[in-house]
Amino acid sequence: VVMSADGYGLEAAGWSKDALGYADWSEALLRGSNSGKASVFPCFGPSAFQTLPQHRLLDDKGVEGPSNTIYTLAHAGFSAGPLRDAVLARVSLGADGISRMDADVVFGGLNATQAARKWIEENREVYDSWFHP
Image (cartoon, rainbow, N blue to C red; front, top):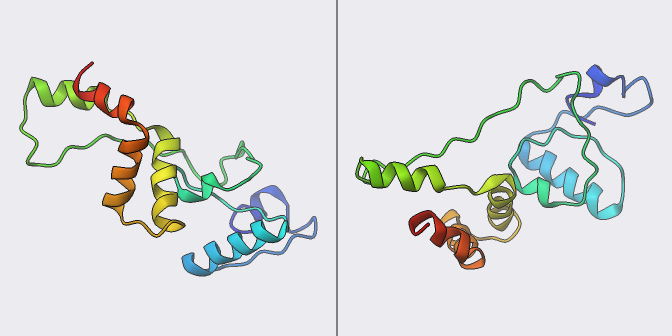
């Protein structure tokens, strides 16, 4: 159990709290997931960890803080104007798309460019709709 143990009384229920760095935390999570051992952890999203089998617990007490927002950004070289604005308004990966690409990097050994290209290949119709509605 990490972070939210205090806010939800999990330590009082017999769970232990481990403070781990990211590499140790992710390794412990994967080890626990592979062994079937229960663990509770905050999962920022979108992330590769959301692709693992899990039971989602809502943070109805707000212990982990407010939700984040995903913003669509364009490279500075993408010329400003109505075409750019129209394309950016249609771009939508969703949390699942971002989590899938992150998993391809974290678990699949791809770099970010390779993961993006793989997503495009697997979602060609969605990608093409951004440019040709």
